[in-house]
Structure formats: structure tokens, C-alpha cells
Image 1 (cartoon, rainbow, N blue to C red):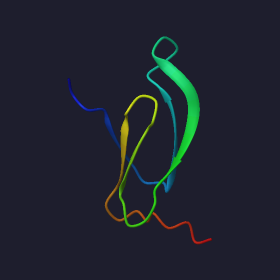
Image 2: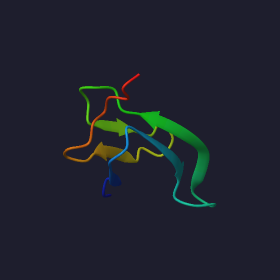
Image 3: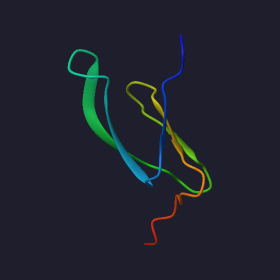
Image 4: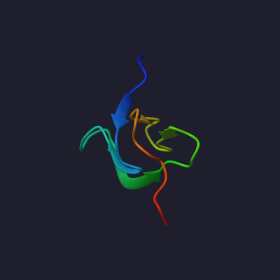
Length: 59
């Protein structure tokens, strides 16, 4: 089974699974610096922060 990996350039992402049949409630995930990876607790989809993108929010 291959790991579902999505590269993003935003410090926060939303995940709701793979559609209506295999979906789950929408969850918002935030990268915690220095980590450049966050995993959805429902479907285990892995989001990777793109090179050059910042995990910091500036808040």
C-alpha cells in the first residue's frame, strides 16, 4: 500500500479524506516548526511543506 503524500506551500491545510465514500470530517492541520510534515489523524494522509515555504505563521 502506498503512502498518500501531498506537498503544500501553506502553513496550514485542511483534510477531509478521499471523497464522500472514504471521507471523514474536515480537520485543519498546522505545521509545527521545525517539522515540515503533518499527518491527518483520520486517514493518515501526509502533508509535506514544500521547499522554500515557511511553517511559521508570523503571529
